[in-house]
Amino acid sequence: MRHTTLKSGLRELLAHTLLFCGIGLVLTLAGWLGATDLLALLLSQPGRRWPILLLTLILSLAISGFLIFAHRAAADRANLAVMQQKAATARQAEIASQLAMLQAQIEPHFLFNTLANVQSLIDQDAATAKQMLAHLNDYLRATLTRTRLPQGTLGDELTVIRHLLFIAGIRLGERLQWQMEVDPGLLTHPLPPLLLQPLVENALKHGIEPALLGGRLHIRAGHLGDELVLTVSDNGVGMPPSGHGHGVGLANVRQRLDSLYGAAGRLRLQPNPEGGVCAALHLPWQGDQAGDSPISQA
Image 1 (cartoon, helix red, strand yellow):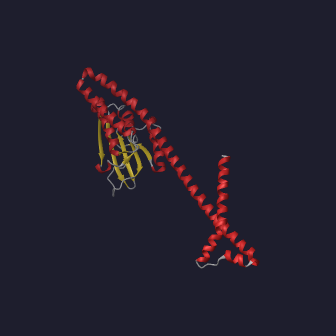
Image 2 (cartoon, rainbow, N blue to C red):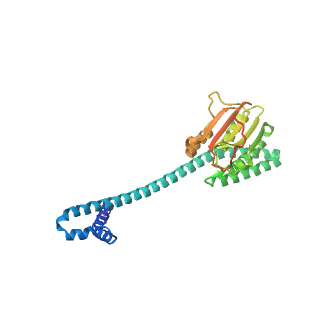
Image 3 (cartoon, rainbow, N blue to C red):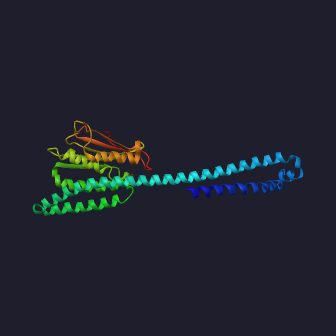
């Protein structure tokens, strides 16, 4: 550190020395261009030496100060850009870590339940067991592809959710009905992974599965103003008396929304008029389409 400071001081001293030595040449050049040659005036009129020297010194210090200020401002801008890049890299790493943590929390529960169902179906209904394994294979392949990308699309997320619902449908049978209502033009809209899927998992686990007769799951996506609105509604057992969502999945979704969008992204939970719960994700619109896609308001 001391060596760096000494080196920087010597560099500034050299710059000042060169500046003072060169100021005479600059003034002479100015004389050639038609301005007053202060150097020649200094030599020809000794009586006016000190005023001229003072003027030269002030001019030199002004030019030197400007150059030093410009150099330091450029260095500060470069340092700020480096710091911003490091902060962005750290933020991306934090978001990737959160995604990996959320993935690790979701996958084992779903995987173990599915494999247990396959095991029970092998002796009773081998064809259905084979069908469930095929959907599980497609689900895991789509999930692996999605989580390797820094940014996915709504279509990627719905592909994973579709396989998840096919598997849940085999397990729950007629107790589960589901529907997706999504404008095809929205499928390419950017969407970070594992924002919508936990809402579907939550609706299945806490809304439809505990209901004696099961229920219906409805997934909607629409462009409303400057937001992409994604809703997952069910007509299951409804919200708990506390009025808050269940489990770590929703807490992780809220945390990821805050990390990704700040105040511009939010999750809203409220009772579904048909019974059950309606969960709505409000995300900043990142597309270039004009107009609003119709979407039911909860």
